[in-house]
Image (cartoon, rainbow, N blue to C red; front, side):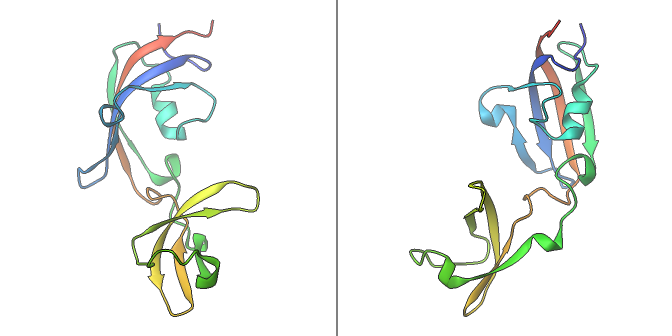
Length: 145
């Protein structure tokens, strides 16, 4: 049996950057990643690599930014007045802020600059613009048909 659209799968994985540092793994999460093929719950390149694999099948893939979290977008760097941020913490570059959007969603942003009256926040995904490497293993396939 091979993985196809609509199947539920459990995937063991390790994700690394070009320098070999691990940014995520199923071992770190304590269990395999579970999702249904075709629902868009994982990045496109990751999902596409799983299709056609067999149970216990293993492979290594490299995803360019376009198949992962996209290119780093300079328009996603926002300058925000400090008075719009709760003053309960000292704001420093590198800190992560959770920003509320008008539609109720929340996005994390990384502070990249603190000025007298404003802060600059990078709202890009932390892995945007990066090439990602994955070691994949199909632990389980639950067929949709």
